[in-house]
Amino acid sequence: MIISYPDHCKIVKDALEGNIAADEKTFASITALSERLEQVRKLGGGFAEVGFSPAVNTLRRTTNAVAIG
Image (tube, rainbow, N blue to C red; front, side, top):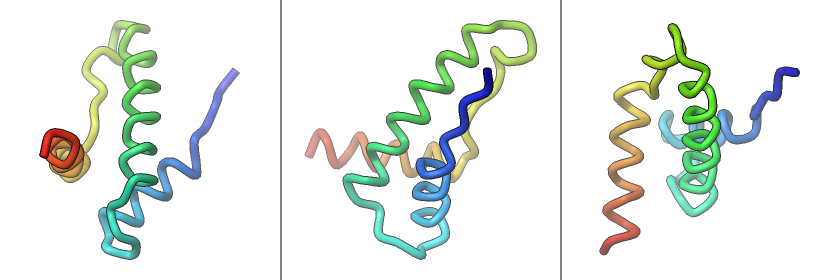
């Protein structure tokens, strides 16, 4: 069964494009997508190297900085 997360993807995409502000909803979507990514990586093989784009990784670091600060 394939599960898609179009709302999470759209929220993150819109934040990266500057269409919406990166807020709690954006960071919650990144968290949800991160959890799903870990599930995919556990499948192994070629999926072990799947990751976020550099832009999303930068936004994730922003999320961590906001949470700490």
